[in-house]
Length: 551
Image 1 (cartoon, one colour):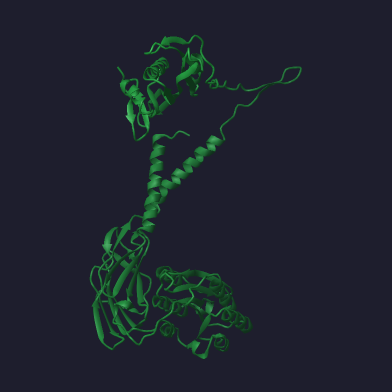
Image 2 (cartoon, one colour; image 1 turned 90 degrees about the vertical axis):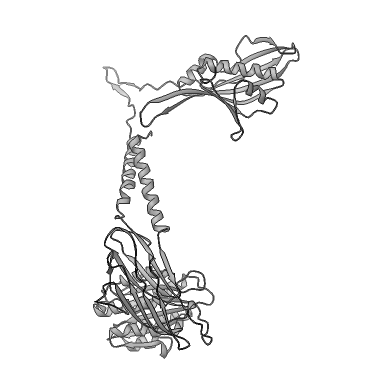
């Protein structure tokens, strides 16, 4: 299929759109800024209109004063199993989402063999995996915040699905597998106990939280120990319960943490709610977190921003402040960084227009090409019997002749030493060459020099003549020409080589050849080509000559 100019433009736009989208989703997937112990990371660094920016502010524990008495904390792989039955609607499911997100903020989600990982399972009448094991905080937080209530309570289904995630995941040798189960309803106790025992047989530590009217006896029974069973009479206490569980897993290097953050409220607005934080009414861009502790692996807090205009802006144009009490009992105060910048672009669907149009158009062209009408037999019905006239088939171009089919009457000449030689031309005849070229077929020719007295070949060249054409996409004009390719060249003496080359050029002139190309000859034969005005291309390992430019 030959492409028109506007089709090429559409294809280029489609390729550029897809390339830009890939760059935005990979290179622009995040940006970060850091000052002392506080790092701010945004996902993504390039955002399209209508998308939200996840802002993570992380306190790096390894940048705080060291605590000699603190032991080493092993990686934890945690499955958060959350009841989303109808009884969890309203405040319970909202507090469960916030508490689970806060737990994720205390994890060190790094995919290097030493970091933590989290998976999220929800259950009602059945169980659903909403986030497989992930090392990305913002993905896990978004999955948790998207949990909605509805349905009954099937604790066993949630435990079975969570256990399957551990069975299908290869954990580091020193990692601790943990399931944290939250429920507020009644479930089949026997099925729940069997599922819990199966999880424990996989060396999975099980902690349970009973909220409201939950089946406390069953939840206490399936916990790994009495210390791993928690009761929450009020949904607002879930945040503290999850925090208590986390502190037992990740330790503590600082307490009494107050973190002040300033976001750019002139170009962004908050999207979604905040947990463990309050927004200052007098300062519309200020958020204040009061955190009970920082774990040995650090701690994150986060929020989501929705852009209100296009441009390149710092998410936090003003430095904030962090204050805490370190593990040695000393107060510590640090300034938080500004930035990083986020690039807010047009709606992403604009990048899909050119690729979709290009795909639809080329599918149309392909279908049209496949369904081209083929010549059908013409049927006539005379009195005797029908006669079918078949469609005429186009005549084929002549095939390439054999290189041993020599023309008659060779040229009888002598070389510079007086040696009698014969110069012969073989391959396709002049008529066959013209027919082949007019049918866009290559034509083969061979020139051979024989020493008559010695009865041996002393020089030769095999050639191919081809028809070429090129259409200018802008003007629509078509340029047609012919090229000759010297496939090999050999001669025992310079004079013999000149005779072969002169004959080749004569044939080229006869058939209106524009350019002659050939492989770079041996060093002793190169002077022949140089004397005939050929260009030597060392990089391409070839020689060439334009007959239009020759005198």
